[in-house]
Each structure stands twice: as structure tokens, then as C-alpha cells.
Image (cartoon, helix red, strand yellow):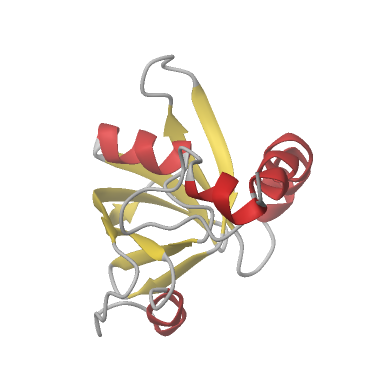
Length: 144
């Protein structure tokens, strides 16, 4: 099976939210890179850590992401497709995220499909939306 066809049948590859990353890189990142990046991402400019709860397990997770903010809107490009953290946050209807050392509470999470043109999105998220889905949520406020 070629990389593009295995990507096509991967569970992260959802309608309107194509998986642009090869599955082998996805697995490598989850197993090796994310555990290293999560503590660093809390302090690194441009990096963020989204905190979410497993839909069926109830387990608390933290996933490093690159978030873009414009006013009270937060956006994250979904080059990995509709991953578990996205599904978890959508199911919960909320999440917390550390962005630039600020703890924020997110509400009204949604996924915009690839090709969306939305001027209210941060510039880099609009650029990513040309080819990938974009996770968007409203910032309800700062948390402790």
C-alpha cells in the first residue's frame, strides 16, 4: 500500500479534514516526539499544549500543538487530520490550552474543512485552511 493510499484509509483522514502527514510519521511523532515536546511547548514561543480528556477512557491527556490567536478566537491547523485530541475536545465541548505561558479555557470547538475562507481566522490559520482542516474554538477566558 502506498503512503497516499494508507493515508487515505487512516482513521484521522476525515471528510474535509485530509491527513497530510504520512501515517508512519504520525506514529513516530505520537510515540517519541510528543512526550519530549509537551513540557517544552509550555514555555516555547509559538508552541502550545492542549489539555483534553479521552472520550471513552476519561484519561487526561496533553498534546503539543501550534495555536494561532486572533482576538478571542484560537485556531490550530490539522495537518494530521482529525486526530484523537480533536475528537476528544469536540466530544467534551471544551478544553484548556497553554498558549505563551497563559492558561486559556476554550469553548465552542469546531472544525472547518479544508478550503474554508474565513477572514476572522488568524492569518497563518487562513493560510493552512487552503489545504487542511482547521480546529477553531472561542476563548472563554484565562484560568488559574
